[in-house]
Image (cartoon, rainbow, N blue to C red):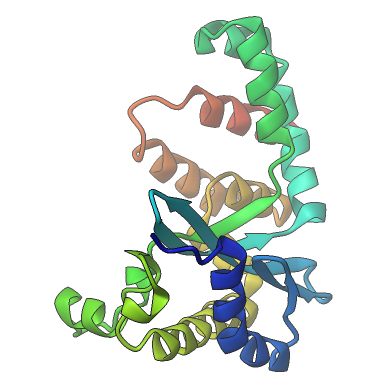
Length: 224
């Protein structure tokens, strides 16, 4: 049985990616490398999710984007939704479950995340070719040395992260509009881009069979 600990594996990973991230202003906090963009209040995270069961490790790399000041404003509108008796009645959950869900929703400052790194596949690259060169983002192993070119793959994950951050920083507001729903609606309303707001809302409705929260969010967002 593999006696290597979770912390030891994270340390091995950090030894590879740490110096590269530090050059870009990222700071390590346990299993997370984090960068604060003071110009936008965006917080970018590279998260190492690692668990161990029956002697085998399960690894998942994840990218997170947070913006607490912006999301606080979005959540002010969302709070009105979760206090609306009509919404609560339509939701149908118990009072206890409503309170729990409300607490989770209103303390969420996430703007976006990457959980599937296949989004970084080149336009003309086959999925098989991509997986051959980069599969470490979600994998299981007994010993990390079992992963082909694991250090090179980790370096590639840093390069992908840099591209992700760069794409967002090139136009943060447009990224929000293109990649989010509630946040995009709030931003479009704030910028008084009403036609685009309605287009975004109507398109978002087509993504779900039923989304009462979205309908009520739009109602409170546009009432003033």
